[in-house]
Amino acid sequence: MENILVASDLSSNSKAAIRFAIQLQQQGKFMPTFLHVTEILKPIKWSDKFFKDFELKEMESLQRKFKRFVAGLYEKAGVEFQEINLLVKNTSSVTKSIMYNAEKGQFSYICIGNKGAGNPLEIFGSTASALITASKVPVISVPAKYKAEKITSICYASDLVNLDEEFKQVFKFTAPLASNVELLHFKIPFDLYNEQQQVDKLMKKLADVKVSARFEQLNIEDSLVENLDKAMKKSKPSMLIMFTDQKRSFFERLFMSSKSSEFAQTAKIPLLAFSK
Image 1 (cartoon, rainbow, N blue to C red):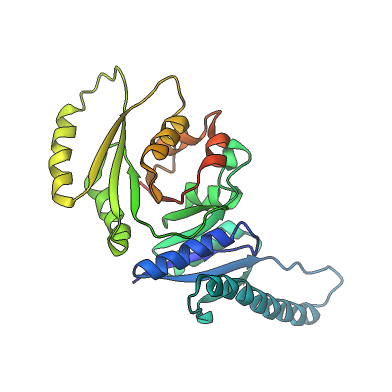
Image 2: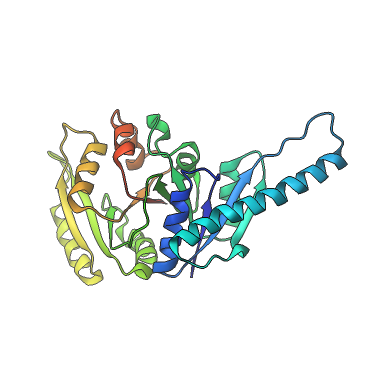
């Protein structure tokens, strides 16, 4: 059983992440725990005792509100809800709290909704973006307009580096879902490095693990975002998997382009980001 920490701020955008988590729970061996992070500030004039009583009542009220919020989505999905998997935390940093609870609870994945628009540096919403660039636990970012559906195909975009290690992590997620997996690689025109030998070796390996492969020529007139967007429109996968170097890598080059906000607005599938 894979445990998923699903973060929610009780907004309509966060409903998508909960719907996706319910889909994973129904389709494979995944168990979601739902986390809401809040910050209750203490007015200077209040005594510690008065504030503690107030804080306790507020947290109890939030727990009930959060339960209704999540339970309502379970009811719409026609799935039984177990309230034991609800956490409400009071802290000043949402991102740090999510990462701390994910690591402390030994969760396999973090799932969070994204706004799907905005500043190019915040295309997944500030919290989702921060998690993808800093979390040791893999992050699933779900577009706000995502509607639950069976996960039948998964596109795994790769630069063909460290494939053996990447395969282990990809299959750990995809195996319980029994979905098709397609490896997508963009070939760079005029690249001095000859990929053919690596590709031939890769095709042999993919035949053994039952993964299909698609090699797209990178259109240098388009941004990497546009290339990826066009590739997604061709194959129409249920979700996308990428491996990111959190220091500075393919992911950063991909999304820090002038077209990144456009891609975010048109993206309709969840993204699972692993850290390299």
